[in-house]
Amino acid sequence: MKIEKFEDIIAWQLGRELVQFVYSNLRDCRDYAFKDQMQRATISITNNIAEGFGRKGDKELTRYLKISKGSCLEVRSMLYSALDLGYFDQKQFNHSFALTVRIEQTIIKFIQSISIYETKDAGRRT
Image (cartoon, rainbow, N blue to C red; front, side, top):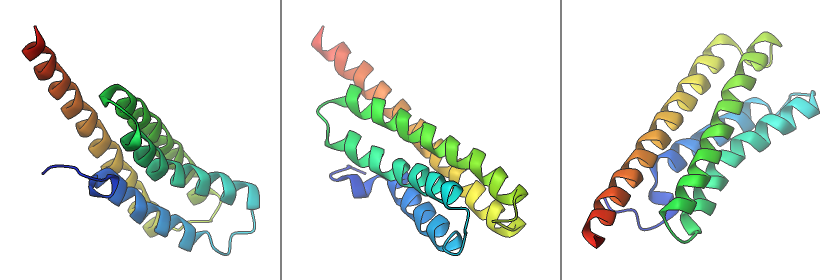
């Protein structure tokens, strides 16, 4: 499948699902600092994918994908706190945790595919 716009990127689509889930499940959370940090980290996943896609070249895209992956791992870490603090129940934790794993794996595969493409492309230029 050819990616023509950032909305075509599976990791972005999964990230959007995670944003909706986190925002809806923290809607009534009164720990505003925690809520704000988790929401910002979650939004960062999709925003960095979009920003990287809009940059020139695969190196820039890869850089932003790595930032997005880091935000994904930050969210995953915060999920443990959300569970421990009672902001998420076990079912909410399991669902959002699984989403972060899928997002991370998808980003890793995307980065690898860019790397393979760069290697093949570089070979043609020599």
